[in-house]
Every structure is written in structure tokens, then in C-alpha cells.
Image: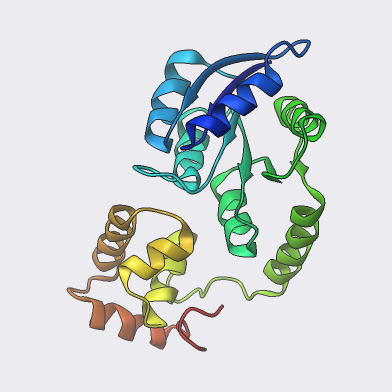
Length: 219
């Protein structure tokens, strides 16, 4: 099993490399300090699994995971992070992560997660598994995207809904764990598909479609 380690803390990377090196069937093929470097290295090193932190400079782990799912769908991503929030977990899973562990996980659990995800399965630590079960239930209860806006993708509807709730581009980027530039690109796409020229007109269309109800930032 070929593993790429991605974390912005050099000492933590060294600890993971030491923990995994020499384990039967495991080869650490490289390390990266940010998501952009990870995407480049995956293309060059062809790992089976990427052990991915979330909070990193240049490109965060959620955005890097989404890029890897699109460009290298056979490469499994296992998140290893200090972020315990449901929003972090949901963002990582939506981006394509097959596993989610907190940094308190021991070597044996990390290895189980890597092996399970390498083999096409999934692995979530106990706290993450409970949170994921709650998120799945919430998604099942959420109404289907409004058919009044069929021209928009699910992600574009999500962005538009947050716009209509009063969130700025920066706040949307923080909530969804993507870059400001990514949000700007989505907003531009929404404007084009709706045939509107500014944020106010887009928000008006959103509210006509039943989006943006409730408190800002609350879904």
C-alpha cells in the first residue's frame, strides 16, 4: 500500500512517517505540506491512499480532496485532522473522503483506516461515525432541491441558498471549506445560468424559489 502524507506541520508528518514506515505492506511514497502540493504529488507518485489534514495553507484539505476525486478517483483519501465539527466532517465527505479520523487516533486505527479505504471501503472513527449518522438522517429529511431552478447544479443551489441567507463570499468559503476564488467562480456561474447581473438579483431569484429561509448561516 503506497501512502502519501499531507499535513502542514513538519514534525507531525515526521511522526506519521515514523509510525508507518516498516509496517508490513506499507510504503510512504512522499509528504506534502499543503493541498496544492498534494494534488501535484499524487499525479507523480501514484499513491493508493492519501492521509490528508484539513486546515492547511495554499489549498485546504477539503478542496484538495475534491480535486483528487475528480482527477484521480481511484486514490482514496483518509482525513486525519483536529477538526471535530460536523461541518468539517460533512465537507470532507462531500468532497470525496472515504475515511475521517481525529489526530488522537493511534497507529493501529490509522492503519485499519488506510487499509479499509485502500480496498474500496470506508472508515470513520467512533465520534465521526456517530456524527455521520446524524448528518445522513438530516440529509434524508432535507427537501429535494427546488425544481424552479433546474438549471443549477446541487452545489450551485447550495451556494445560492447561502447567498440568500446573507453570507458573504468569504463566509461561504469558510463554511464549505473551499477557497474564496472557488466561491467566486460558483457565484459567477450562478449569475450566468440565472441571467442576472448582480448579487441582489440572484438573491431575489433565490427567495422566489424558496431558498434563503431561516437565519443567516443556519441550514
